[in-house]
Image (cartoon, rainbow, N blue to C red; front, side):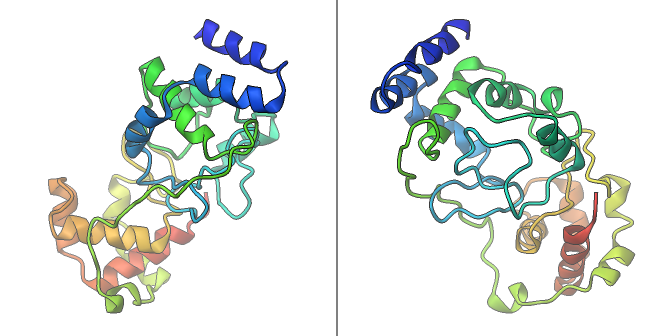
Length: 237
């Protein structure tokens, strides 16, 4: 990895067009990174039409301060890291992908990390094609992400009652922490409501293979799922 970053430093003295070519070569294989990124795409979208979902979209991630993407509600720990000077560059992104909690201890991201250096390099090469800094490369087509289950417009149109969701949430919070913490169990706070609803219906229809979640979701009505989505989507952390 030391040689990897040395190549990047050396490339910095070249004109920007040459930097783009040299840096792309030094980072890794973006085509292979596309496949590895599938582990991330359930939460993070990229591309000109990308939006924030469970996690913020990753357009323009290079050179951006941590916790600084406007409109996304970050954990207090991520916001604090940005205020303390954490900026996403090749080195910090590599460290975060290897072990998110080692770099930002209170992050809500439940992903355990990519342990292979080449995997991380390839993912960063892929993500770099969506960032105009330092490469000035136009952003590419968005990563495709289909819902696990197609729901009717009537189900998606249900407006959940967050107070009712709070009443129902006690069974959820026996495992999931309401403050957004994660001790091996994914955080469910701040999810976009539609993502929450889709995930619960996927468990309900046994398309997601977790027997406890299948049982829990199977007991919930469409209105109760919507209420839980509204409650957890609004929790402060």
